Every structure is written in structure tokens, then in C-alpha cells.
Length: 82
Image (cartoon, rainbow, N blue to C red; front, side, top):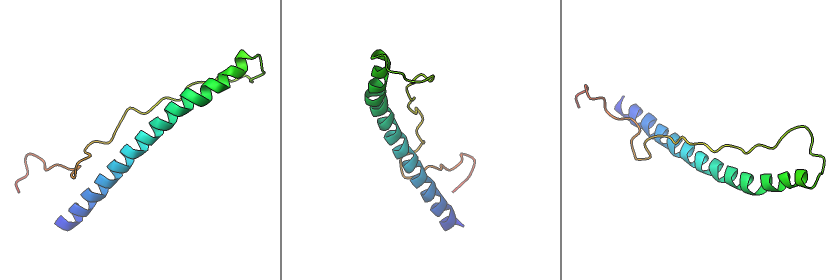
């Protein structure tokens, strides 16, 4: 049972690391998208070029990260003895 729990905890840690990486990459993309593409897209309106009915809105970044970048995401409960 201990080995199974250790395996699951390791898998959870890997998922957390992957989620953190995805958040960082997503935020990098949104910064580039908002700072480069959206600025260029808004110039169409400034040049009186038909842009359609929809307004361009910035894409929000993600503020949450997975907890526990360290080796263990699961901590031993306080009321459990070793």
C-alpha cells in the first residue's frame, strides 16, 4: 500500500509541475497576444476599416498556480502517527 501511495503522490507532483508550466506558458502567450496582436488589430478601427460588430477584448492571464512545487504534494495529517 505504501508503494502505491508513493506512486500516486509522485504522479500528483508531476501533474502540479505540469499545471504550473502550463500556467506560465499561457500567461506568456496572453502577454504577447495582448501586447502585439491586439494592438495591431485595434489599429484597423483607428484607420476606419470595417471591423465587424464585435469589440476586441484582452485575454486575461491566469493567477493560480498548483501548490507544492517540492517533492511532496501530500503532507502527513497531524493526527496520524508514523
